[in-house]
Length: 109
Image (tube, rainbow, N blue to C red; front, side, top):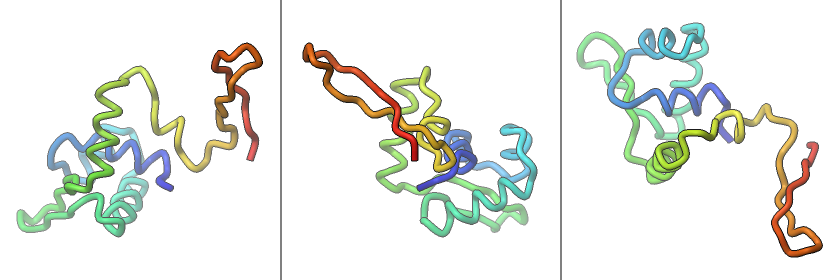
């Protein structure tokens, strides 16, 4: 599972960006962005291009990224990194209510 920081980096990559640009845009320490980009690169989610002398980071064409980006665009009111990050201890569990309507409860893990 990806961390909240990694999901935010994915959201911010709307084109090639340097790690410094990402750190400034996301208000993260440069080391946080470097760690996130390194992990995302190991999963083949981002590509690091060093041909210009700077490290430019772009999204790969992984299908899972396309799906994630379409979710973000379709539901901009939902903060997906907060909802799905590994450091979230409480999860919503949707269960049918006795009257047949959808309900929800929390699950602690």
